[in-house]
Figure 1 (cartoon, rainbow, N blue to C red):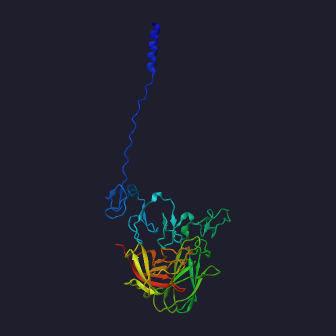
Figure 2: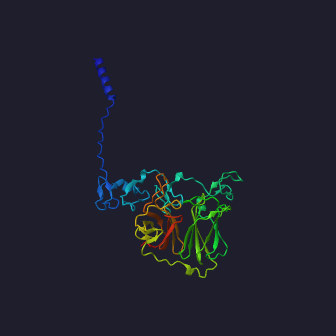
Figure 3: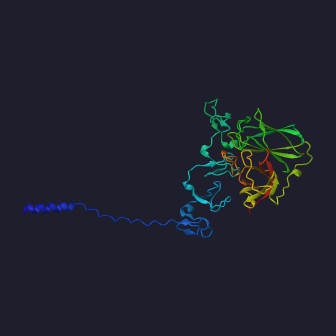
Length: 426
């Protein structure tokens, strides 16, 4: 009996110390995934579960999360330079723009070799000169001036070591290389119209003060010069030659007495692009500066005939607006047959050149076609499109004179002159 009692006591003690077994927890049921939503950027009430055309504007709906992110970009599959923040059609070919998610694109910047202030998050063309933008990591980093971090008075035009402390000279801030002082000397000092005169330009490094000798080639030349009369009736695009002392010289003839402006366009190696204006007046000028100013009247018929071609200027948008980018498009046809012209010859590595001045000469623009001359000529002579487009930017309202040059026959280009009105944004 005592043994039985003891056995029961042991069973009760074991039961009291046993741990309760955990009860199985209910597994969470997977929630039904919300269907994808697509919306129209222009008409936010247009919503669908797939990328159908918007019933209001016809543009494709895009994913709602992309529309909310602000990283939607619309581009033309054929013309990669066409990039905008809203849907629509390509202004060149009319194709519907396709959406891109900028969040998925590599974090690479693109910059214009001629205008480093023009940058973009994607490939394209410069809005000022139409050159192809280049990846920043593929541009050779160089500078026109270097300075010692310890002794700022020690400067050099090339990488070197400081003679005082031995430290390597560091590239100067690019902002110090914005403006390269340029001197113009004229021989004879008092030139007369219709007589030969020599123009000589000397460019100096803004940090070292030394004469600049190294210049980058831009459109086949290292120095472009535009000679324009004060009244904008005379225009010449010429190219001085570099002398042994580093200066650039050119002999020319000014056609009549008066005031002239010289616009020197060049890129010092390691510096920033320069468009420097200089003025001179002939010794036989009998008018004052005010009476010599241009009095431009916009063309009523934007078409010119010269050099065997009819050239018609078309604008996009229809009216030029100050502060907005614009496209100058020239439709080229043969003046004898009326057939589209596709046999232009490349002139200075481009299908054409355009120089623009406003009425008082304070705003100057030098730009090139959006379509580049093909580098691969194995298939024969390159063929141009019968419509040549230039992208530009008009900084302020007023009347502008536009000189555009095309080379078709002979060795010299033909210049077509247009006068346009740039309106104020209202």
